[in-house]
Length: 596
Image (cartoon, one colour):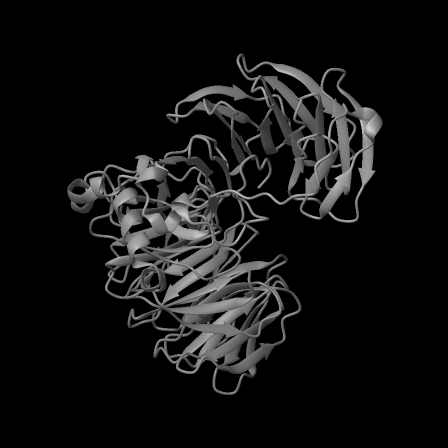
Protein backbone atom coordinates (compact mmCIF):
# COMPACT_ATOMS: atom_id res chain seq x y z
CA UNK A 1 0.00 0.00 0.00
CA UNK A 2 2.85 2.39 0.83
CA UNK A 3 4.30 1.86 -2.67
CA UNK A 4 0.95 2.71 -4.25
CA UNK A 5 0.64 5.87 -2.14
CA UNK A 6 4.13 7.01 -3.10
CA UNK A 7 3.39 6.39 -6.79
CA UNK A 8 -0.05 8.02 -7.00
CA UNK A 9 -1.02 9.81 -3.74
CA UNK A 10 -3.88 11.86 -5.18
CA UNK A 11 -5.57 8.87 -6.80
CA UNK A 12 -5.29 6.84 -3.58
CA UNK A 13 -6.82 9.79 -1.72
CA UNK A 14 -9.77 9.69 -4.13
CA UNK A 15 -10.08 5.94 -3.55
CA UNK A 16 -9.99 6.50 0.20
CA UNK A 17 -12.98 8.81 -0.09
CA UNK A 18 -14.95 6.36 -2.24
CA UNK A 19 -14.18 2.99 -0.65
CA UNK A 20 -14.04 3.79 3.08
CA UNK A 21 -17.15 2.91 5.15
CA UNK A 22 -20.04 5.36 5.02
CA UNK A 23 -19.70 6.31 8.68
CA UNK A 24 -15.98 7.12 8.46
CA UNK A 25 -15.03 10.71 9.24
CA UNK A 26 -13.03 11.18 6.03
CA UNK A 27 -15.96 10.10 3.88
CA UNK A 28 -18.52 12.20 5.78
CA UNK A 29 -16.32 15.28 5.68
CA UNK A 30 -14.80 15.16 2.21
CA UNK A 31 -16.74 12.82 -0.11
CA UNK A 32 -18.19 15.74 -2.07
CA UNK A 33 -14.68 16.63 -3.22
CA UNK A 34 -14.99 14.18 -6.13
CA UNK A 35 -17.63 15.83 -8.36
CA UNK A 36 -16.67 13.70 -11.36
CA UNK A 37 -18.02 10.50 -9.72
CA UNK A 38 -21.77 10.41 -10.30
CA UNK A 39 -22.46 6.89 -8.97
CA UNK A 40 -20.41 5.71 -6.03
CA UNK A 41 -19.58 2.06 -5.20
CA UNK A 42 -21.56 0.36 -2.46
CA UNK A 43 -19.46 0.10 0.70
CA UNK A 44 -19.86 -1.13 4.27
CA UNK A 45 -21.43 1.12 6.89
CA UNK A 46 -18.63 0.66 9.44
CA UNK A 47 -14.98 -0.38 9.51
CA UNK A 48 -14.23 -4.09 9.75
CA UNK A 49 -11.55 -5.53 12.01
CA UNK A 50 -9.20 -5.99 9.03
CA UNK A 51 -5.93 -4.11 9.61
CA UNK A 52 -3.79 -4.86 6.55
CA UNK A 53 -3.72 -6.92 3.38
CA UNK A 54 -0.26 -8.16 2.35
CA UNK A 55 0.01 -8.57 -1.42
CA UNK A 56 2.81 -9.94 -3.56
CA UNK A 57 2.29 -13.67 -4.05
CA UNK A 58 1.30 -14.68 -7.57
CA UNK A 59 -0.67 -17.77 -6.53
CA UNK A 60 -2.72 -18.77 -3.52
CA UNK A 61 -1.22 -18.46 -0.03
CA UNK A 62 -1.01 -21.73 1.90
CA UNK A 63 0.17 -20.53 5.31
CA UNK A 64 1.20 -17.49 7.34
CA UNK A 65 3.17 -17.37 10.61
CA UNK A 66 4.35 -14.58 12.91
CA UNK A 67 7.91 -14.63 14.15
CA UNK A 68 8.10 -15.10 17.96
CA UNK A 69 8.78 -11.38 18.51
CA UNK A 70 5.78 -10.47 16.34
CA UNK A 71 7.83 -8.28 14.00
CA UNK A 72 7.78 -10.57 10.95
CA UNK A 73 5.15 -12.56 9.08
CA UNK A 74 6.32 -15.48 6.92
CA UNK A 75 3.90 -16.58 4.21
CA UNK A 76 4.13 -19.64 1.95
CA UNK A 77 2.52 -19.94 -1.46
CA UNK A 78 1.86 -22.17 -4.41
CA UNK A 79 4.02 -19.70 -6.39
CA UNK A 80 7.03 -21.69 -4.99
CA UNK A 81 8.20 -18.86 -2.73
CA UNK A 82 8.23 -17.85 0.92
CA UNK A 83 7.80 -14.12 1.56
CA UNK A 84 8.75 -12.18 4.67
CA UNK A 85 6.74 -9.11 5.71
CA UNK A 86 7.16 -6.34 8.24
CA UNK A 87 4.13 -6.92 10.49
CA UNK A 88 3.94 -3.26 11.49
CA UNK A 89 4.08 -1.62 8.05
CA UNK A 90 3.01 -4.50 5.79
CA UNK A 91 6.09 -3.94 3.64
CA UNK A 92 7.63 -6.99 1.96
CA UNK A 93 11.18 -7.47 3.25
CA UNK A 94 12.27 -10.74 1.64
CA UNK A 95 11.46 -13.32 -1.03
CA UNK A 96 12.90 -16.79 -0.37
CA UNK A 97 13.29 -18.64 -3.67
CA UNK A 98 14.63 -22.13 -4.33
CA UNK A 99 11.75 -24.59 -4.07
CA UNK A 100 10.70 -26.20 -7.34
CA UNK A 101 7.06 -26.80 -6.43
CA UNK A 102 4.34 -25.34 -4.23
CA UNK A 103 5.45 -24.29 -0.73
CA UNK A 104 2.86 -25.67 1.66
CA UNK A 105 4.01 -24.08 4.92
CA UNK A 106 6.66 -21.81 6.42
CA UNK A 107 7.51 -21.23 10.08
CA UNK A 108 9.99 -18.99 11.95
CA UNK A 109 12.25 -20.43 14.66
CA UNK A 110 11.96 -19.31 18.29
CA UNK A 111 15.00 -17.03 18.05
CA UNK A 112 13.74 -15.56 14.77
CA UNK A 113 16.93 -16.44 12.91
CA UNK A 114 15.62 -19.29 10.71
CA UNK A 115 12.63 -20.09 8.53
CA UNK A 116 11.72 -23.70 7.73
CA UNK A 117 9.62 -24.28 4.61
CA UNK A 118 7.92 -27.50 3.50
CA UNK A 119 7.18 -28.14 -0.16
CA UNK A 120 5.60 -30.45 -2.67
CA UNK A 121 9.11 -30.86 -4.12
CA UNK A 122 9.64 -33.40 -1.25
CA UNK A 123 12.10 -31.19 0.64
CA UNK A 124 12.25 -29.02 3.74
CA UNK A 125 14.48 -25.94 3.40
CA UNK A 126 16.04 -23.75 6.08
CA UNK A 127 16.58 -20.02 5.43
CA UNK A 128 18.45 -17.22 7.19
CA UNK A 129 15.89 -14.48 7.94
CA UNK A 130 18.51 -11.70 8.05
CA UNK A 131 19.92 -12.39 4.58
CA UNK A 132 17.19 -14.43 2.89
CA UNK A 133 19.73 -17.05 1.84
CA UNK A 134 19.15 -20.81 1.91
CA UNK A 135 21.07 -22.58 4.71
CA UNK A 136 20.05 -26.23 4.41
CA UNK A 137 18.05 -28.55 2.16
CA UNK A 138 16.59 -31.44 4.19
CA UNK A 139 16.11 -34.40 1.87
CA UNK A 140 14.72 -37.84 2.68
CA UNK A 141 10.96 -37.71 2.20
CA UNK A 142 9.64 -39.60 -0.83
CA UNK A 143 6.44 -37.58 -1.33
CA UNK A 144 5.22 -34.01 -0.84
CA UNK A 145 5.86 -32.41 2.54
CA UNK A 146 2.94 -30.43 3.90
CA UNK A 147 4.28 -29.08 7.17
CA UNK A 148 7.48 -28.33 9.08
CA UNK A 149 7.78 -27.25 12.71
CA UNK A 150 10.68 -26.16 14.95
CA UNK A 151 11.11 -27.61 18.43
CA UNK A 152 10.88 -24.96 21.18
CA UNK A 153 14.67 -24.81 21.54
CA UNK A 154 15.15 -24.60 17.76
CA UNK A 155 17.46 -27.61 17.65
CA UNK A 156 15.03 -29.87 15.77
CA UNK A 157 12.65 -29.61 12.83
CA UNK A 158 9.78 -32.10 12.47
CA UNK A 159 8.22 -32.54 9.01
CA UNK A 160 4.97 -34.27 8.02
CA UNK A 161 4.66 -35.88 4.60
CA UNK A 162 2.42 -37.77 2.23
CA UNK A 163 4.99 -40.62 2.44
CA UNK A 164 3.19 -41.63 5.71
CA UNK A 165 6.04 -40.53 7.99
CA UNK A 166 7.13 -37.71 10.25
CA UNK A 167 10.86 -37.04 10.14
CA UNK A 168 13.05 -35.26 12.66
CA UNK A 169 16.04 -33.16 11.55
CA UNK A 170 19.00 -31.56 13.32
CA UNK A 171 18.89 -27.86 12.34
CA UNK A 172 22.64 -27.32 12.88
CA UNK A 173 23.75 -30.16 10.57
CA UNK A 174 20.67 -30.84 8.42
CA UNK A 175 20.93 -34.54 9.23
CA UNK A 176 17.88 -36.75 9.77
CA UNK A 177 17.76 -37.93 13.41
CA UNK A 178 14.45 -39.81 13.62
CA UNK A 179 11.50 -41.25 11.68
CA UNK A 180 8.04 -41.61 13.28
CA UNK A 181 6.26 -44.51 11.58
CA UNK A 182 2.92 -46.20 12.06
CA UNK A 183 0.56 -44.44 9.73
CA UNK A 184 -0.83 -46.24 6.69
CA UNK A 185 -1.79 -42.93 5.08
CA UNK A 186 -0.36 -39.40 4.63
CA UNK A 187 0.42 -37.29 7.69
CA UNK A 188 -1.10 -33.82 7.50
CA UNK A 189 0.16 -32.09 10.62
CA UNK A 190 2.93 -32.17 13.20
CA UNK A 191 3.63 -29.98 16.26
CA UNK A 192 5.88 -30.02 19.33
CA UNK A 193 4.52 -29.58 22.85
CA UNK A 194 5.72 -26.39 24.62
CA UNK A 195 8.36 -28.30 26.59
CA UNK A 196 9.45 -30.23 23.47
CA UNK A 197 8.89 -33.63 25.06
CA UNK A 198 5.84 -34.61 23.03
CA UNK A 199 4.90 -34.44 19.34
CA UNK A 200 1.29 -34.45 18.14
CA UNK A 201 0.51 -35.59 14.58
CA UNK A 202 -2.73 -35.53 12.59
CA UNK A 203 -3.69 -37.72 9.68
CA UNK A 204 -6.29 -38.70 7.11
CA UNK A 205 -7.02 -41.81 9.24
CA UNK A 206 -9.24 -39.56 11.45
CA UNK A 207 -6.86 -39.68 14.42
CA UNK A 208 -4.45 -37.52 16.37
CA UNK A 209 -1.36 -39.35 17.69
CA UNK A 210 1.02 -38.38 20.48
CA UNK A 211 4.73 -39.35 20.34
CA UNK A 212 7.66 -39.23 22.74
CA UNK A 213 10.26 -36.95 21.12
CA UNK A 214 13.30 -38.61 22.68
CA UNK A 215 12.36 -42.22 21.87
CA UNK A 216 10.11 -41.80 18.81
CA UNK A 217 7.56 -44.14 20.42
CA UNK A 218 3.81 -43.62 20.10
CA UNK A 219 2.33 -42.28 23.36
CA UNK A 220 -1.43 -42.25 22.57
CA UNK A 221 -4.11 -42.25 19.84
CA UNK A 222 -6.93 -39.66 20.07
CA UNK A 223 -10.10 -40.77 18.25
CA UNK A 224 -13.37 -38.87 17.68
CA UNK A 225 -13.26 -37.01 14.37
CA UNK A 226 -15.56 -38.33 11.64
CA UNK A 227 -13.15 -37.60 8.81
CA UNK A 228 -9.45 -36.95 8.25
CA UNK A 229 -7.72 -34.62 10.70
CA UNK A 230 -5.85 -31.79 9.01
CA UNK A 231 -4.38 -29.98 12.00
CA UNK A 232 -3.36 -30.51 15.64
CA UNK A 233 -1.80 -28.00 18.04
CA UNK A 234 -0.87 -27.88 21.75
CA UNK A 235 -2.12 -25.23 24.15
CA UNK A 236 0.64 -23.02 25.63
CA UNK A 237 0.71 -25.03 28.87
CA UNK A 238 0.74 -28.34 26.98
CA UNK A 239 -2.37 -29.62 28.75
CA UNK A 240 -4.66 -29.49 25.69
CA UNK A 241 -4.50 -30.40 22.02
CA UNK A 242 -6.86 -28.84 19.45
CA UNK A 243 -7.53 -30.77 16.25
CA UNK A 244 -9.69 -30.02 13.20
CA UNK A 245 -11.06 -30.68 9.71
CA UNK A 246 -14.66 -32.03 9.83
CA UNK A 247 -16.34 -28.60 10.37
CA UNK A 248 -15.40 -28.88 14.06
CA UNK A 249 -12.47 -28.17 16.36
CA UNK A 250 -11.99 -30.77 19.09
CA UNK A 251 -10.12 -30.28 22.36
CA UNK A 252 -8.24 -33.15 24.04
CA UNK A 253 -6.66 -33.63 27.47
CA UNK A 254 -3.04 -34.73 26.83
CA UNK A 255 -2.72 -36.47 30.21
CA UNK A 256 -5.74 -38.74 29.67
CA UNK A 257 -6.25 -38.68 25.88
CA UNK A 258 -9.95 -37.90 26.46
CA UNK A 259 -12.01 -35.43 24.42
CA UNK A 260 -12.98 -32.40 26.53
CA UNK A 261 -14.69 -30.07 24.04
CA UNK A 262 -16.21 -29.77 20.55
CA UNK A 263 -16.26 -26.29 18.93
CA UNK A 264 -19.05 -26.17 16.35
CA UNK A 265 -20.16 -23.37 14.01
CA UNK A 266 -18.16 -23.58 10.80
CA UNK A 267 -20.18 -24.56 7.75
CA UNK A 268 -17.33 -26.23 5.88
CA UNK A 269 -14.04 -27.94 6.62
CA UNK A 270 -11.82 -26.42 9.30
CA UNK A 271 -8.33 -26.23 7.82
CA UNK A 272 -6.41 -25.33 10.97
CA UNK A 273 -6.80 -24.26 14.59
CA UNK A 274 -4.40 -22.47 16.93
CA UNK A 275 -4.37 -21.34 20.58
CA UNK A 276 -3.77 -17.75 21.65
CA UNK A 277 -0.55 -17.26 23.67
CA UNK A 278 -2.50 -17.19 26.94
CA UNK A 279 -4.50 -20.29 25.96
CA UNK A 280 -7.85 -18.53 26.45
CA UNK A 281 -8.83 -18.43 22.77
CA UNK A 282 -8.69 -20.74 19.76
CA UNK A 283 -8.66 -19.35 16.22
CA UNK A 284 -9.93 -21.68 13.49
CA UNK A 285 -9.55 -21.19 9.72
CA UNK A 286 -12.07 -22.75 7.37
CA UNK A 287 -13.05 -23.38 3.77
CA UNK A 288 -16.22 -21.41 4.59
CA UNK A 289 -13.98 -18.30 4.04
CA UNK A 290 -14.04 -17.30 7.72
CA UNK A 291 -11.79 -17.31 10.75
CA UNK A 292 -13.60 -17.95 14.03
CA UNK A 293 -12.46 -17.22 17.57
CA UNK A 294 -13.51 -19.49 20.45
CA UNK A 295 -13.36 -19.30 24.25
CA UNK A 296 -11.50 -22.43 25.38
CA UNK A 297 -13.06 -22.44 28.88
CA UNK A 298 -16.67 -22.42 27.64
CA UNK A 299 -16.37 -23.66 24.05
CA UNK A 300 -18.49 -20.70 22.88
CA UNK A 301 -17.85 -18.76 19.68
CA UNK A 302 -16.29 -15.38 20.46
CA UNK A 303 -16.14 -13.75 17.00
CA UNK A 304 -16.37 -14.41 13.25
CA UNK A 305 -13.74 -12.69 11.08
CA UNK A 306 -15.13 -12.24 7.56
CA UNK A 307 -13.41 -10.67 4.57
CA UNK A 308 -11.57 -13.40 2.66
CA UNK A 309 -13.11 -14.25 -0.68
CA UNK A 310 -11.96 -17.87 -0.82
CA UNK A 311 -10.93 -20.75 1.45
CA UNK A 312 -8.88 -19.76 4.48
CA UNK A 313 -6.06 -22.25 4.98
CA UNK A 314 -4.50 -21.10 8.23
CA UNK A 315 -4.64 -18.59 11.06
CA UNK A 316 -2.11 -17.68 13.74
CA UNK A 317 -1.94 -15.32 16.73
CA UNK A 318 0.73 -12.69 17.25
CA UNK A 319 2.93 -13.11 20.31
CA UNK A 320 0.88 -10.65 22.38
CA UNK A 321 -2.41 -12.22 21.25
CA UNK A 322 -3.74 -8.90 19.95
CA UNK A 323 -3.68 -9.88 16.28
CA UNK A 324 -4.48 -12.85 14.07
CA UNK A 325 -2.95 -13.40 10.63
CA UNK A 326 -4.88 -15.55 8.17
CA UNK A 327 -3.84 -16.99 4.80
CA UNK A 328 -6.23 -17.75 1.97
CA UNK A 329 -6.67 -19.13 -1.53
CA UNK A 330 -7.68 -15.56 -2.48
CA UNK A 331 -3.90 -14.83 -2.63
CA UNK A 332 -3.88 -12.57 0.44
CA UNK A 333 -2.75 -12.62 4.03
CA UNK A 334 -5.05 -10.64 6.30
CA UNK A 335 -4.42 -9.25 9.77
CA UNK A 336 -7.18 -8.92 12.37
CA UNK A 337 -7.50 -7.13 15.72
CA UNK A 338 -8.77 -9.66 18.27
CA UNK A 339 -9.98 -7.11 20.84
CA UNK A 340 -12.35 -5.29 18.44
CA UNK A 341 -13.28 -8.20 16.17
CA UNK A 342 -16.73 -7.65 14.70
CA UNK A 343 -18.80 -9.78 12.41
CA UNK A 344 -18.80 -7.90 9.07
CA UNK A 345 -21.00 -8.97 6.16
CA UNK A 346 -19.83 -9.19 2.57
CA UNK A 347 -22.21 -8.20 -0.18
CA UNK A 348 -22.51 -11.46 -2.12
CA UNK A 349 -24.94 -11.87 -4.96
CA UNK A 350 -23.57 -14.75 -7.00
CA UNK A 351 -22.58 -17.55 -4.64
CA UNK A 352 -19.28 -17.94 -6.50
CA UNK A 353 -16.77 -15.73 -8.27
CA UNK A 354 -17.66 -13.74 -11.40
CA UNK A 355 -16.44 -14.66 -14.87
CA UNK A 356 -17.92 -11.81 -16.91
CA UNK A 357 -20.20 -8.81 -16.76
CA UNK A 358 -21.57 -6.68 -19.62
CA UNK A 359 -23.87 -3.67 -20.08
CA UNK A 360 -26.85 -3.69 -22.50
CA UNK A 361 -26.67 -1.33 -25.52
CA UNK A 362 -29.22 1.08 -24.01
CA UNK A 363 -27.36 1.09 -20.70
CA UNK A 364 -30.42 -0.05 -18.72
CA UNK A 365 -29.37 -3.62 -17.89
CA UNK A 366 -26.26 -5.45 -16.74
CA UNK A 367 -25.72 -9.19 -17.22
CA UNK A 368 -23.18 -11.09 -15.12
CA UNK A 369 -22.02 -14.70 -15.27
CA UNK A 370 -20.51 -16.86 -12.56
CA UNK A 371 -19.07 -20.18 -11.44
CA UNK A 372 -22.44 -20.80 -9.77
CA UNK A 373 -23.86 -21.83 -13.21
CA UNK A 374 -26.09 -18.77 -13.51
CA UNK A 375 -26.46 -15.53 -15.44
CA UNK A 376 -27.96 -12.66 -13.46
CA UNK A 377 -29.59 -9.48 -14.74
CA UNK A 378 -29.31 -6.14 -12.92
CA UNK A 379 -30.60 -2.66 -13.49
CA UNK A 380 -28.03 0.13 -13.38
CA UNK A 381 -28.82 0.97 -9.75
CA UNK A 382 -27.42 -2.44 -8.81
CA UNK A 383 -30.79 -4.11 -8.17
CA UNK A 384 -31.05 -7.73 -9.35
CA UNK A 385 -33.96 -8.28 -11.74
CA UNK A 386 -33.50 -11.80 -13.11
CA UNK A 387 -31.66 -15.13 -12.66
CA UNK A 388 -31.02 -17.27 -15.78
CA UNK A 389 -30.26 -20.73 -14.47
CA UNK A 390 -30.43 -23.46 -17.13
CA UNK A 391 -26.68 -24.04 -17.52
CA UNK A 392 -25.34 -27.19 -15.88
CA UNK A 393 -21.79 -25.89 -15.35
CA UNK A 394 -20.07 -22.57 -14.73
CA UNK A 395 -20.86 -19.70 -17.11
CA UNK A 396 -17.76 -18.10 -18.62
CA UNK A 397 -19.24 -15.07 -20.39
CA UNK A 398 -22.41 -13.20 -21.29
CA UNK A 399 -23.33 -10.58 -23.90
CA UNK A 400 -26.31 -8.64 -25.23
CA UNK A 401 -27.48 -8.62 -28.84
CA UNK A 402 -27.09 -5.22 -30.56
CA UNK A 403 -30.79 -4.44 -30.08
CA UNK A 404 -30.64 -5.51 -26.43
CA UNK A 405 -33.44 -8.05 -26.82
CA UNK A 406 -31.30 -11.16 -26.34
CA UNK A 407 -28.60 -12.28 -23.91
CA UNK A 408 -26.18 -15.02 -25.19
CA UNK A 409 -24.17 -16.96 -22.48
CA UNK A 410 -21.15 -19.31 -22.96
CA UNK A 411 -20.54 -22.13 -20.50
CA UNK A 412 -18.36 -25.02 -19.41
CA UNK A 413 -21.38 -27.22 -20.16
CA UNK A 414 -20.30 -26.97 -23.86
CA UNK A 415 -23.23 -24.79 -24.90
CA UNK A 416 -24.12 -21.22 -25.78
CA UNK A 417 -27.60 -20.29 -24.60
CA UNK A 418 -29.86 -17.49 -25.82
CA UNK A 419 -32.22 -15.71 -23.40
CA UNK A 420 -35.02 -13.19 -23.76
CA UNK A 421 -33.69 -10.13 -21.90
CA UNK A 422 -37.18 -8.86 -21.00
CA UNK A 423 -38.52 -12.12 -19.55
CA UNK A 424 -35.38 -14.07 -18.64
CA UNK A 425 -36.68 -17.15 -20.48
CA UNK A 426 -34.34 -19.38 -22.50
CA UNK A 427 -35.04 -19.15 -26.21
CA UNK A 428 -32.29 -21.23 -27.77
CA UNK A 429 -29.40 -23.62 -27.10
CA UNK A 430 -26.40 -23.66 -29.46
CA UNK A 431 -24.84 -27.13 -29.14
CA UNK A 432 -22.01 -28.98 -30.85
CA UNK A 433 -18.80 -28.17 -29.03
CA UNK A 434 -16.80 -31.12 -27.64
CA UNK A 435 -15.22 -28.82 -25.03
CA UNK A 436 -16.11 -25.84 -22.86
CA UNK A 437 -17.21 -22.62 -24.54
CA UNK A 438 -15.15 -19.66 -23.34
CA UNK A 439 -16.93 -16.67 -24.88
CA UNK A 440 -19.32 -15.51 -27.59
CA UNK A 441 -20.19 -12.31 -29.45
CA UNK A 442 -23.09 -11.11 -31.66
CA UNK A 443 -22.66 -9.78 -35.19
CA UNK A 444 -23.73 -6.12 -35.73
CA UNK A 445 -27.11 -7.17 -37.18
CA UNK A 446 -27.69 -9.76 -34.44
CA UNK A 447 -28.19 -12.57 -36.95
CA UNK A 448 -24.97 -14.39 -36.07
CA UNK A 449 -23.14 -15.43 -32.92
CA UNK A 450 -19.43 -16.22 -32.97
CA UNK A 451 -18.11 -18.39 -30.12
CA UNK A 452 -14.70 -19.71 -29.11
CA UNK A 453 -13.78 -22.90 -27.28
CA UNK A 454 -10.84 -24.66 -25.69
CA UNK A 455 -10.64 -26.80 -28.84
CA UNK A 456 -9.15 -23.72 -30.60
CA UNK A 457 -12.08 -23.26 -32.93
CA UNK A 458 -14.34 -20.32 -33.71
CA UNK A 459 -17.91 -21.28 -34.58
CA UNK A 460 -20.51 -19.14 -36.28
CA UNK A 461 -24.17 -19.75 -35.42
CA UNK A 462 -27.41 -18.64 -37.02
CA UNK A 463 -29.39 -17.13 -34.13
CA UNK A 464 -32.74 -17.79 -35.85
CA UNK A 465 -32.19 -21.43 -36.85
CA UNK A 466 -29.85 -22.19 -33.90
CA UNK A 467 -27.48 -24.02 -36.25
CA UNK A 468 -23.72 -23.96 -36.93
CA UNK A 469 -22.86 -22.36 -40.27
CA UNK A 470 -19.07 -22.10 -40.14
CA UNK A 471 -16.20 -23.60 -38.12
CA UNK A 472 -12.80 -21.90 -38.20
CA UNK A 473 -9.77 -23.74 -36.83
CA UNK A 474 -7.21 -21.49 -35.10
CA UNK A 475 -3.72 -22.26 -33.81
CA UNK A 476 -4.23 -20.62 -30.43
CA UNK A 477 -7.06 -20.02 -28.02
CA UNK A 478 -8.68 -16.66 -28.71
CA UNK A 479 -9.35 -14.45 -25.69
CA UNK A 480 -10.74 -11.25 -27.26
CA UNK A 481 -13.14 -11.17 -30.21
CA UNK A 482 -15.30 -8.55 -31.96
CA UNK A 483 -17.11 -8.39 -35.28
CA UNK A 484 -16.14 -5.66 -37.74
CA UNK A 485 -18.88 -3.12 -38.44
CA UNK A 486 -19.75 -4.79 -41.77
CA UNK A 487 -19.83 -8.28 -40.19
CA UNK A 488 -17.24 -9.60 -42.65
CA UNK A 489 -14.34 -10.00 -40.21
CA UNK A 490 -13.67 -11.00 -36.63
CA UNK A 491 -11.06 -8.89 -34.89
CA UNK A 492 -9.38 -11.11 -32.29
CA UNK A 493 -6.50 -11.08 -29.83
CA UNK A 494 -4.52 -13.12 -32.42
CA UNK A 495 -5.35 -11.15 -35.54
CA UNK A 496 -8.23 -10.66 -38.00
CA UNK A 497 -10.30 -13.60 -39.24
CA UNK A 498 -12.01 -13.18 -42.63
CA UNK A 499 -15.44 -14.82 -42.78
CA UNK A 500 -17.10 -16.38 -45.83
CA UNK A 501 -18.77 -13.57 -47.76
CA UNK A 502 -21.70 -15.76 -48.85
CA UNK A 503 -22.92 -15.93 -45.27
CA UNK A 504 -23.16 -12.20 -44.71
CA UNK A 505 -24.88 -9.17 -46.09
CA UNK A 506 -22.97 -6.91 -48.45
CA UNK A 507 -21.54 -3.52 -47.69
CA UNK A 508 -18.26 -1.71 -47.71
CA UNK A 509 -15.58 -3.62 -45.92
CA UNK A 510 -13.61 -1.70 -43.36
CA UNK A 511 -9.85 -2.16 -42.99
CA UNK A 512 -8.54 -3.89 -39.85
CA UNK A 513 -8.66 -1.53 -36.91
CA UNK A 514 -7.75 -1.43 -33.21
CA UNK A 515 -10.18 -0.97 -30.36
CA UNK A 516 -9.68 2.18 -28.30
CA UNK A 517 -11.70 3.39 -25.33
CA UNK A 518 -11.18 6.13 -22.81
CA UNK A 519 -12.15 4.06 -19.73
CA UNK A 520 -10.10 0.98 -18.88
CA UNK A 521 -9.74 -1.34 -15.89
CA UNK A 522 -6.55 -3.15 -14.90
CA UNK A 523 -5.95 -5.37 -11.90
CA UNK A 524 -5.54 -2.46 -9.47
CA UNK A 525 -6.61 0.67 -11.37
CA UNK A 526 -9.41 2.38 -13.23
CA UNK A 527 -7.76 4.56 -15.86
CA UNK A 528 -9.00 7.31 -18.15
CA UNK A 529 -7.13 7.74 -21.43
CA UNK A 530 -4.43 5.48 -19.94
CA UNK A 531 -3.90 7.76 -16.93
CA UNK A 532 -4.46 6.37 -13.43
CA UNK A 533 -7.78 7.59 -12.08
CA UNK A 534 -8.84 5.38 -9.12
CA UNK A 535 -6.98 2.70 -7.19
CA UNK A 536 -9.09 -0.40 -6.47
CA UNK A 537 -8.86 -2.00 -3.00
CA UNK A 538 -8.43 -5.78 -2.92
CA UNK A 539 -12.09 -6.66 -2.40
CA UNK A 540 -13.17 -4.50 -5.36
CA UNK A 541 -10.72 -5.81 -7.97
CA UNK A 542 -12.00 -7.38 -11.11
CA UNK A 543 -12.40 -10.94 -12.12
CA UNK A 544 -14.33 -9.38 -15.01
CA UNK A 545 -15.79 -6.04 -16.00
CA UNK A 546 -17.90 -4.18 -18.52
CA UNK A 547 -17.76 -0.55 -19.62
CA UNK A 548 -20.27 1.70 -21.31
CA UNK A 549 -18.50 4.76 -22.70
CA UNK A 550 -21.81 6.36 -23.68
CA UNK A 551 -23.01 6.37 -20.08
CA UNK A 552 -19.46 6.59 -18.66
CA UNK A 553 -20.34 3.56 -16.52
CA UNK A 554 -18.04 0.81 -15.23
CA UNK A 555 -19.38 -2.43 -13.73
CA UNK A 556 -16.86 -4.67 -11.97
CA UNK A 557 -17.45 -8.26 -10.90
CA UNK A 558 -15.12 -9.39 -8.09
CA UNK A 559 -14.08 -12.80 -6.79
CA UNK A 560 -16.15 -12.20 -3.65
CA UNK A 561 -19.38 -12.15 -5.70
CA UNK A 562 -19.59 -8.36 -5.32
CA UNK A 563 -20.90 -6.22 -8.22
CA UNK A 564 -19.55 -2.65 -8.17
CA UNK A 565 -21.13 0.16 -10.22
CA UNK A 566 -19.19 3.41 -10.75
CA UNK A 567 -20.14 6.15 -13.22
CA UNK A 568 -18.33 9.35 -14.13
CA UNK A 569 -19.00 12.87 -15.39
CA UNK A 570 -16.13 13.51 -17.78
CA UNK A 571 -16.91 17.22 -17.96
CA UNK A 572 -15.90 17.54 -14.31
CA UNK A 573 -12.59 15.68 -14.67
CA UNK A 574 -9.30 17.59 -14.54
CA UNK A 575 -8.21 18.57 -18.05
CA UNK A 576 -5.17 16.28 -17.96
CA UNK A 577 -7.40 13.19 -18.04
CA UNK A 578 -9.21 14.24 -21.19
CA UNK A 579 -6.11 14.08 -23.39
CA UNK A 580 -5.52 10.60 -24.84
CA UNK A 581 -2.10 9.07 -24.51
CA UNK A 582 -1.19 5.58 -25.75
CA UNK A 583 -3.97 3.71 -27.55
CA UNK A 584 -5.30 0.61 -25.82
CA UNK A 585 -5.47 -2.47 -28.04
CA UNK A 586 -5.87 -5.35 -25.60
CA UNK A 587 -7.09 -5.97 -22.06
CA UNK A 588 -9.92 -6.86 -19.73
CA UNK A 589 -11.41 -3.40 -19.80
CA UNK A 590 -12.83 -3.19 -23.32
CA UNK A 591 -16.37 -2.02 -23.87
CA UNK A 592 -18.22 -5.07 -25.13
CA UNK A 593 -15.71 -7.61 -23.80
CA UNK A 594 -17.67 -10.78 -23.13
CA UNK A 595 -15.09 -13.03 -21.50
CA UNK A 596 -12.60 -12.10 -18.81
